[in-house]
Image (cartoon, one colour):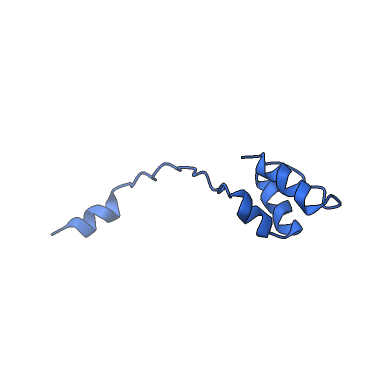
Length: 67
């Protein structure tokens, strides 16, 4: 009956922050469908800096190894 009063006057502890692995591992086939700029953004999630002057095939090979 007085649950709403109890909620007002009690201190609620915040839930602990749980970090999730947000970087999703993609297959090589999906990587080949991406553009160079998309591959660059995906590589940065792993801390890898992509040189866009390279061919797309070399970039895909390099990013696929990051898994």
